[in-house]
Image (cartoon, rainbow, N blue to C red; front, top):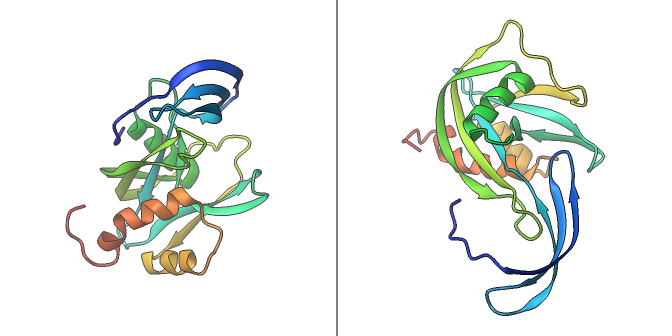
Length: 188
């Protein structure tokens, strides 16, 4: 975790729900500044995301249906980190399942919190290069409704700036590698 931990004191757990992808809890806490109150939190195991770039310089994204927003979002391939799984293993699996590509070169971009006001979810971002298109990609999960989309970095930046529906983790990850992708190819 990139930031130092300064955990609140748990005074009372009022509600706890274990879901398929995350847990939800409501706790009475004492914060480091001695303030006390009830706070809700989504506990999430974290996600791993790839910024895949083809040898031709195209970014590989997915347009995926998301029930919570009632529509399709443009996203980089990503997935939930399973228990005791390395985030790099997560994203290697997800890029193949979601896009039908395999990357042979991986580089860590960093990690960041996605919504720290109500969730502890952290995203582990990676640059995926030296891509090959798989002849037979793995099957997608039953509930996935995904279309692979290839865009230049310039096209993606234009889509972001025009307000197309793109999720925050993809926008954040794009800006982690923006200078590299748009011509300043110094090491990240």
